[in-house]
Length: 86
Image (tube, rainbow, N blue to C red; front, top):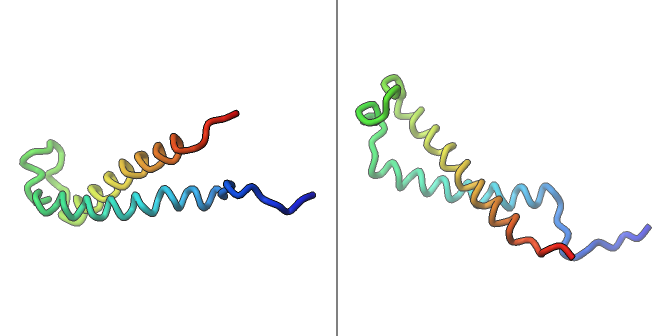
């Protein structure tokens, strides 16, 4: 067996981190920008069923929602950026 690896090979862990880390940073920035303009305490006025949500809960839900959206975007970029099959 040869121990020579393909120079374009990346492990699964490297690919996952390459998707999650930039999306984490982007979601953090997007959360700051979003909640600069929107006060979570006023969400109950505009969103039905959000009467019992605390500010911390709104910040957390907003961050994880934005993280999921940006992770999907990063994953699609990674998927479509691969070389085409032969």
